[in-house]
Amino acid sequence: MIAHLRGTLLSSGEAIVLEVGGIGFALQVSARTAQKLPSPGSEVCLYTWLQVRQEGLSLYGFLEPEERELFLLLQEVNGLGPRAALNLLSTFSWERLADVVRRGDVTALVRVPGIGTKLAQRLVLELKDKLWRRIPGIQQGGTALPVEEAVAALTALGFSAVEAEAVLARARQALGEQGTTAELVAYSLKLLGQQGGS
Image (cartoon, rainbow, N blue to C red; front, side, top):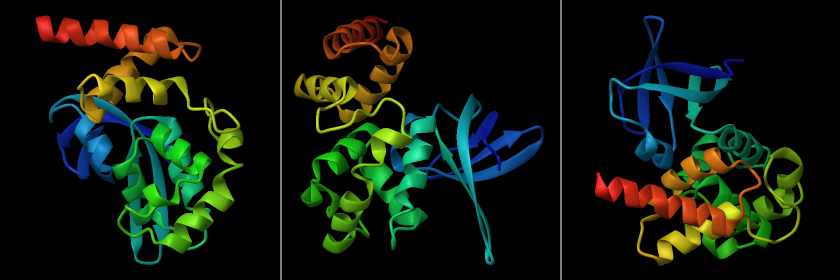
């Protein structure tokens, strides 16, 4: 398995090309990942998953290992393939999707293209108790994660979900997994203030 690729981003969008050692790898990514990628010409590291089928090979890229693990976990649900899994991760951040599944929010899930009511119910039923075992940082039960709460706080302050998730990724890296909601929000606002002043 190709665990990750680090190289130069040649083209952006939901089908990107990453040049590694003179070889251009075509990867499919979620819309959210595509929005967070730097401009072409920048170096980027993506966690990957290779799908092997009779029709050919498909390579998928993820900015975080948790997103890749959730993508793989989603495909354990009968009737849910890579395209639907990518649609889910294009609609929700991996943290928000985990929380939606954990809370059993079928209404939110059926808004995603390719996800009908029965599939959404099956997804919740089969994954609700697996999430916290398989993905580090996800707690058992229905309590929202500090990152999830911080996203809600920042969007309530007027920042877009993409802005909030991008700055929180930096805040979480700086503060570590033990950062509380209040600490994450405060650090993120500091970063956003620096961006606004530059």
